[in-house]
Image (cartoon, rainbow, N blue to C red; front, side, top):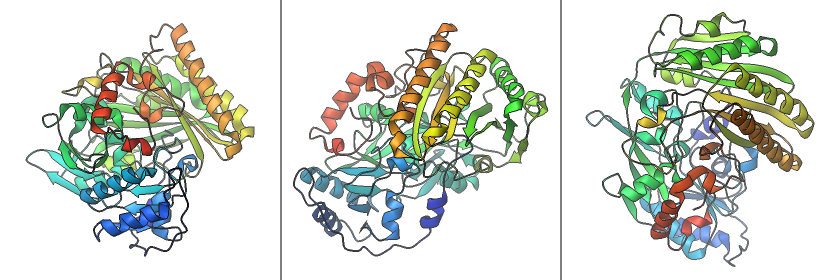
Length: 496
C-alpha cells in the first residue's frame, strides 16, 4: 500500500469508548426470506452477556462497520462483537441455519468490496484484544481484534517483537491468514510463516486449536486461505529479540527522482544483509509527484555506508534516527488515504535496475496525470525490495505462495479515488498498468509472468488460479471437508 499513509483515526476515536447500548432496528427480508433483524436478535439472545449486538444509531455500530477504504464499507443490518470463541460458534451456527450473509472484520483494511463487510451481520473482532507473551516458548498469543501496532507496543517491555505489518493501522487477521511482508521478512519470512497455532471456530461452531501436528491440512490452508475454513479468534506467533532499530523516512521531489532511483537500484544490487530493508513509494498525490523511502536496519546503528546513496542524494525531507521498532512503524503520516475508494495490484520482479525503476516512474506519472480527471487523489507504485531467500524461513507448506523455489521483490500498485462513478475506470486502469509492467519486465528478460500474485494486493477480478496455482485443488478439498454446507460462502473474500 502507500507506504506513508494508513489510518488509525477511527480506531482512536472509538477504540477507547465504552459499550453503547443497542437500539432498535427496522428489519428487512433477505433472499432466503429471513428477517435479518430477527437473526440479529436471535444472536443477541443466545450468546453470553459479554458479547453484544449493535444497531444503526450507536457509535459502536459505526465503528464496527467502518473500513479504511470507502469502497469496502457497507451498512450492515446489525453488528456483532463476540467476546468468546464459543459465542462466535453460536453466531456461525445461526448464520448458517438462516443462510444470512455476514462479514468478518479484523482491522478493516481490506480494499475489495464485500471482502470483510456485508449488508447482513457484521462480525467485528475487537473484543479479542489480548496479547499474552510466553517467554519460555518465545511466542505471543494475540487476538484478531488487534492492530499490529497494539502487539508491537505490548511486547516492547519484553524487548521482543513479531513479524507483522510494516505500516500502521493493519489488523492481525489479514496478515496471519494472508501473508505479511515485513521489514523483518528477510530474516524470518512472511508474517504467517511465524504462526505456530490458530484458535479456529469451525463453520459448525466447534472451537479447535490448529497446529502443524493437530491438523496439518488446516494448518497449511489457514496460512494464505483467509476465512474459507472458519473464523480465527487468536493466533500464536513466534517472537524475536528486538533492540532499537535504525531508520525512518526520506522523501524526494520529482526533480530528485533520478538520485532516489539510483540509490534503490544500488541497494538491490549490492545489499545481501538480511537485517537491512527498504520500502519505496513512487507517488502522484493531487498533482504532486514524490518518492518516499523507508530505510530500515535491525540494530541501533547501520553498517557504515550502507544507506549513504539515499542520504547524500538531494531530498526534501529526512526523518532518520535510532528508535524503537514501533516508532519506525508509526513514523509515517496518517489518514490521507482513509475514506477513499481503493484498488491494489501486484507485480513480481527478479531484478530492480534503473530501466525498471524508470518504467515504474513513468507509470506513476502517466497514470497519475490521466486519472486526475477521474477523481483520483493518490496513485502509488511501491517498490518492495527483498532477498530471493525470503521464502526459506518456514518448516511446512502454506496455501500461498504455491511455490517457494525463490522469492521475489515486487511492485505494489495502489489507486485511491473519490467518486464511485469511476470505479470501472480505475479497475481497468490498474489492470492495464499491471499488464504493461509484466510485459515490460518480460521483454527485459525477467521470468515473472506466471509468478503467483499476492492475495492481499490482488484486485477483485483476480482469478484463484493466479494466486494459488497448483495448491488450489488441495485447498478446495480441505474447504469441502471442513465446510460441507458452505457456511463460509455467506461471507466475502477469495472463495475456494
